[in-house]
Amino acid sequence: PPNPPPPDVPGVEKSVPNFEKLSVREQLAVHRKKEACADCHRSIDPWGIALERYDAIGLQREKTARRKKPVSAETILPGNYEISGLADLQKYLLKERREQFAKALVTKLLTYALGRSLKLADEPLIEELSAKFAKDDYRLSGLMENIVMSGPFLSR
Image (cartoon, rainbow, N blue to C red; front, top):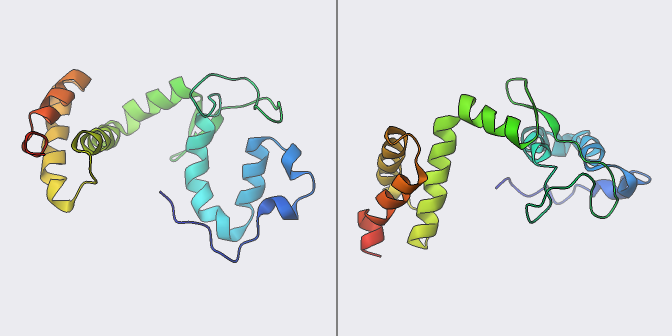
């Protein structure tokens, strides 16, 4: 996760009139204007905006819950890759970041399966599982089988 905001940075809501009436996209744009916030938000906001058509529990929506503002999932990812929503995000991840996404998935599933945080000593297993996952054409069932057959899982 990103570092917490600096303690001396006042909330944006307090400095912008009618902030609560702005759309999420507009609020984020205002937030990025603050120098102390811009660096992190420039890199994390596009990913969140791409998922804006989904609420906190994953249901699709056309408007925000509280403000009833229309949602827009159009954004620009790193490398000036324009997307609009989940389908485009999926295409981007498969085309531009397949290995990185696969390794992140392996890491998260392994963490869950082992019931503990991973350690540096787990890195060779992550690499091995990631390589097998790719060789198996990214089949989730194969990854799950490899995780449950791994030494750390069997000896937990």
